[in-house]
Length: 362
Image 1 (spheres, rainbow, N blue to C red):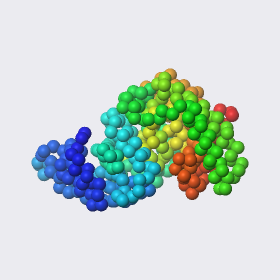
Image 2: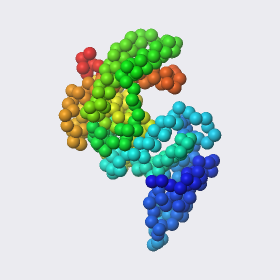
Image 3: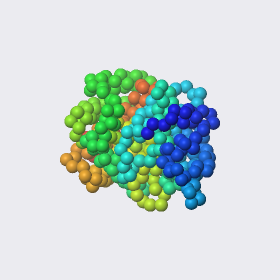
Image 4: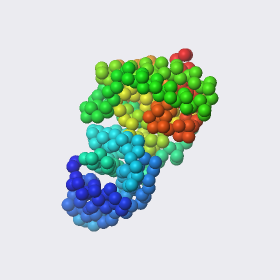
């Protein structure tokens, strides 16, 4: 939906103004509803954006009151442009084009706006914090939470499987590099990273990188071919670690996914790799990796996916975990994010890779 320009101009300032007309539009309130109050519950700057939590209340013609909490994300006023701004806009493009479907494990979006000059952006989601909790409030040692997260990913992937419901997203995802370009980029990134990392990490871990690079090139080749063939591929979240899920407080059911900055078309086990990459308490146990992957694959079948075997899913997972080894490498190469950012994560990605290779007896 297109809104009057001044609606957004009034929001992009130190003391944001939310007009009644604007709120009526985004909340789809009818003429018999009257806005009663607009209270900013929180207004803070993170490393990447300004976050506002807003409480709206209104009443209808019978004097019955209603309320809704909203979560807003926008640029930090006066801050220099940062590398994450483009990813915030990329997230907004996802919400602007995703099909409406109540069964998708995503949070309802009320507005997704990018200004004509691309300098300002605004994302407004329902604030679900009253009914959902973050990974801070779950028992990480309870495998059921990890299985439920894997099922949410399967539900999300199945909706867009092989390009279904994703025509606009496929055009927007924008990764048109050739495999030769990708190989060159990985090699250049690794060369630069190894010079830097030798000061901060044990040299014995660097023996893993050539093996992981070979698997990563295989992954990129397979990923490119699948995108061309539109086979066993889907929209993926791209950063689906456990902290990007919101879990229902009152039921033991599928969680919702947040933070879609890194969505793209791809091989879906990348999302399972990211799930088990961070805070997974069984990272050194191949059987628990396999348990989560099997449950994910079974969920895909439950949601109607065919012609994708468990063996293929397992191979995809290994190659995805190999690609994760290059997360710190590319973050240093692209964003100058070094050891103070990744720290133990360098060892974690390598140990995950070694663990998962045991599943294929490599």
